[in-house]
Image (cartoon, rainbow, N blue to C red; front, side, top):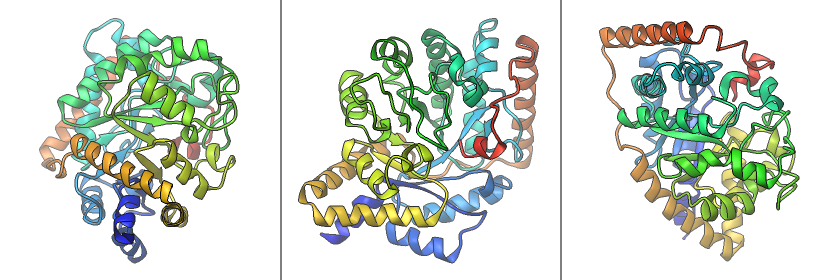
Length: 379
């Protein structure tokens, strides 16, 4: 029973690594917990060969059909920028797409080809938060557009571009950060939008894309004017079960945003956050940066499962469902590597795409979020 519980807990965790190679300690705890997947950041990436070697070794300790996540939205959030090329922001592409059809799909295709070249099977994009005035200082050009219809039009084509290359996408950050004035990496945003506005505007893209998006990421913001006024959405039964699962009818993978972020750990200890995220319905939980909190959440889930028969049943069922969804959404093998000529050709295509977006929407990329680079890096 204890071994089954350990396997169940590991199957719900997506974990980050500290450097460009595995340390002996990382090998030990990866072998112990056998997580559902790996997420990498710029600190982990030098070039395609090194990244693929790191992913290959790390995923050898993971469960089959594991996730390999990377944030490549374009614009200010592009973990492959230095190793490959800059890619236009979602906002710039969405603006240019109003003049020329096919650009949003091309955006998705190029990003998919880029992440595959480095060995990943998922890009944590597109972001479908609304580009509202309240959040411009935090989110900058990451949001595609100010209206739900424009966001949906961009995201639908972007996801189709990813899918054409057999790369999974993730729509984020449910139920919407467009009305937020604070950065959830640092603290819990209290978003002052009522249920009517959220349902009509922020949640419309989720309704429209519910059957197209393999993964939905849930944020750490609170919504004081709704039925759950205090709890971050990532640990809220109201938002995950009542709204996303039942009212919207989403059946794919629900992913909690990084549990190390201030938006949730300033509300509750990370151990409690991990238990709460699983209890309310997350299929996968991210802990992205440091070994200590990864191990703390892992042990907390094990301890709660051993202590509570009710939670043990939840863990085992969540693991069963999560595994089934993961095997459907993610391939068993790493995508093939590109040759040097193919890699250079991909870079050239991305740079030509950049030029075409700049011609159609000059200056649309803008200055990006008015936050230190470290905040953008961990977004």
